[in-house]
Image 1 (spheres, rainbow, N blue to C red):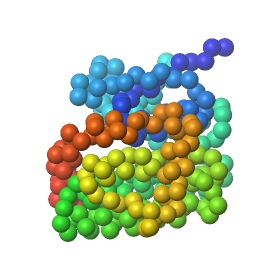
Image 2: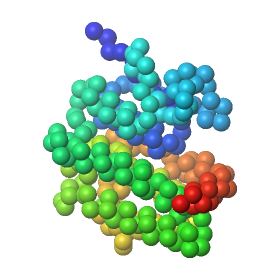
Image 3: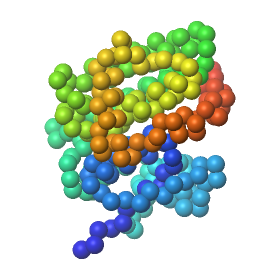
Length: 231
């Protein structure tokens, strides 16, 4: 029986699209990447994600689209054979989901404000972000390469943006948040993650990402100021 085709609607340089690509590759799932121009969104994206019109979007056969990167990863893990991405133990599985959600809910705003504002607002958010990174770092078991053990799993994919994109944003913003002296285990994990052969197959070129993000700096500053005003 012929396998149903898998398409991934994504765009260059997105850490959320990267999450899904890593999951598909770890599971050994062939897929077609359909690159989207988010400044000129296609009818395809509007059709399959009409509410948010964001990437990534996964199309599997004739099924309705699956949206949101973490949801897609769980779908891929359950829908396809291959090594499991989530732990088999129910408690460990729950913890992986918790810390993946923590990364998005608790770290997103503090990281953005710490990168793109200044003064005491920036300093307070930098302290908050570094404290959150410490909490994430503590989830790395001693003697293990990755959060899931010795192979990349769900939580590694979920926080993979720390490994590649945080350094890019730090360079563009001129701010350092993840420092070897403060978070040695997390920095070691970041190196292991980016050096992984499967990850490397879909990791966007760093210089290209820097070049793509630099012209958007003023936009990021305005977004961060709006976030800070709402806190």
